View (cartoon, rainbow, N blue to C red):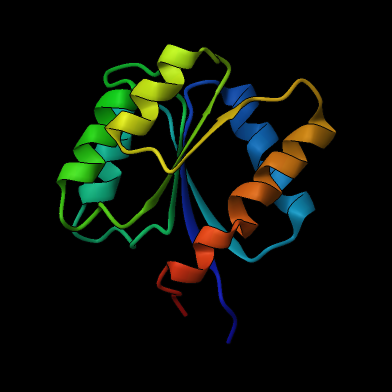
Length: 139
């Protein structure tokens, strides 16, 4: 038996989906990753009756159908979802956007790095931050 984090990545760019998966493999922390391509698919996945409870929701701000802010607000308003650790991982960074993300319920705001090595460190930070001590662990 081992501990595994359930992570869902909401990212519409296939290249970034693959980079996240590769970085996750490099970090080598037991993780079950689900990838969705837009905000509506994310919310459908999170609310599905047969869906696992996700420890971590990683989402881009700029997604089709529902953007990151809309998803964060919906996650925080849902009693079954609001304990998920929500991470914004986006290519955009400005003070207003960061403030909007935190106000909507983000636990962490990160900007997509320029290098793959930095991306690995971002994924490691997401998975190993102090916050994980307060999350339920699934076996």
